Image 1 (spheres, rainbow, N blue to C red):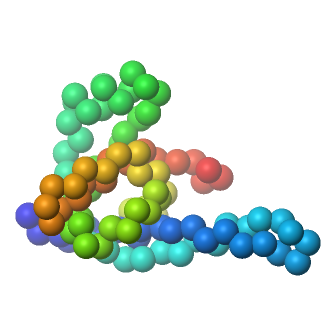
Image 2 (cartoon, one colour):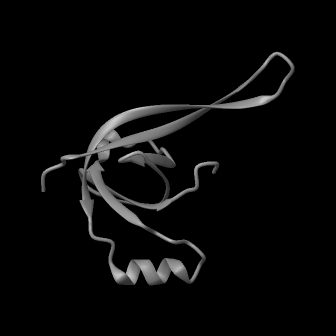
Length: 100
């Protein structure tokens, strides 16, 4: 498979302002991925626990550093499951609202 889809893996750094309020600062990193078909078994099995997977991607394992968010085509996703098989890691994701 060719990794031609652009993904932005998002890591979050938490810092404090002058008065001690915690602030999240996102940092995006471009990687290339292959979009995979989300199987019906995975979809329905996750739905029983209240999770709604909407996309699945495969990236090279060496490019994944445990991020729990990503952006694809301007849409934000939360990574709900990862599976590593050798040099490839699959990321199952669900879309998130603009504020969450």
